[in-house]
Structure formats: C-alpha cells, structure tokens
Length: 41
Image 1 (cartoon, rainbow, N blue to C red):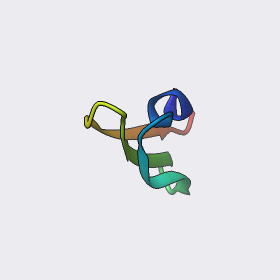
Image 2: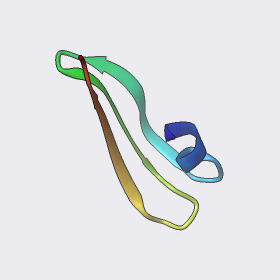
Image 3: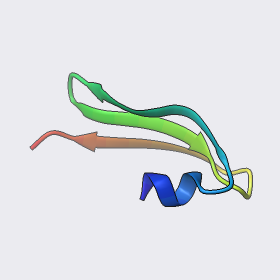
Image 4: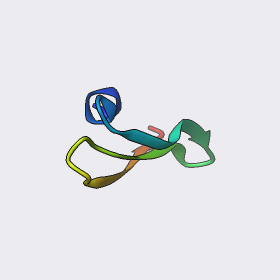
C-alpha cells in the first residue's frame, strides 16, 4: 500500500521500524499527505 501511494509522489520518511511497529509518511501524486502506521502483532 505504501509503495502504491508513493508512486508519482514524494516520500518524506520511508517505512521505518519503530517501538510500536513500522511507520512512514508521504505525499501522493495528488498532493494528499499520508501517515502510515503498522502496529506489531
């Protein structure tokens, strides 16, 4: 999902391991900002 949103946009922070899981943020090709957080199970 992250890579599909990033296609044609700008990645501000690639998916990175965090204490709670994985996080990253980007702006898609339409100018919409996304913050993606994936929790550990």
